[in-house]
Length: 122
Image (cartoon, rainbow, N blue to C red; front, top):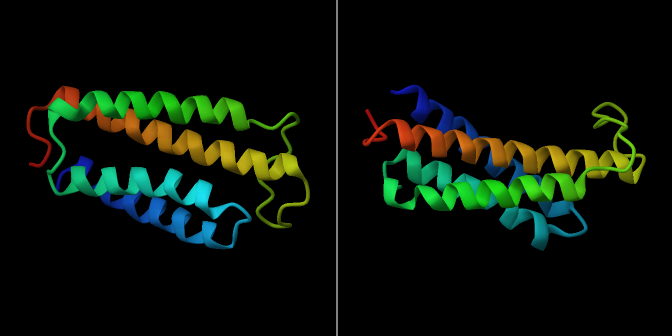
């Protein structure tokens, strides 16, 4: 299995997990689609169903996710507080912005990988 396919599989699991944990969020209708979209794209690339002709969509989506990262960035960075939960809005916004950044970087990696090879699955 190629490194790209392994990465796709790992990111599919990560984004599906991120989607599931949004179920208890106050606004799951907003965050679940944000995380399910890169999961679906990861699966499509994993199974070789994403073509180079669609690679522009990856770049557009990456720009949107990065714009969301900067929009959601907290006014004051307090980290992500994994041990003590979310005590402030800054911690919640920090987590949300980092999730958007991970999605954006994932899409950029896919975009660059599609540019390097004609055939995704080897």
